[in-house]
Image (cartoon, rainbow, N blue to C red; front, side):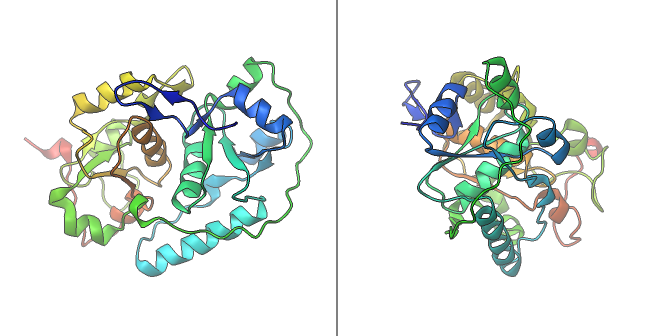
Length: 281
């Protein structure tokens, strides 16, 4: 009932990664959905969707994709999701202020860890309020679950894999133009992964919601990002790249991996190659 609609545009891709306000209202009425507010604490305290539990996903960076680091991150996120009551029997809908990177990161983590139905609320809290949705300041308490993550290795990539396979990969840099160019440095080194294609994640949205699929598809194809490629997504902490993960998956791209440790790992490891576009002649 709460699944995303099917879009009949060039192959008919299922928008299972987005929930509308109307779908969420129906799911809440049927007690068939787990709603998670992915914003920071002050935003949640200022008013949230009734029944939404708070998970400040921005507190959960993990700039380590060594095998041991991945195992530790899986354990940590499994524990976090159990605390907020995640189960496989209910759809999980994450939201932030708009269709933003916090909700994307939370939903992507669940998608990677094997949840069968994790989505973002398209338009976020602003869309909910604009549609007349009720707002609560009562802190929601979740019943701890026994949910167990089952990570899907096809949705992530490690730094050593990128270095080894770089010639066969298409890296999409979802950061700002300044971060990509190396003029805004947020690690020991600035720049990008060699050969990366810059497409800032904010280009996925308009007026707080994802753009139409045909428009997003055309934008990425014009940038040189095509569906036959093996795509790796880069940002600074794995949030903006999670947003583009959903944009590309909704557009029908199948081979998409999120490099969640992002520039916080790559830019701080001296043995990894870096390209500084502003220095190119």
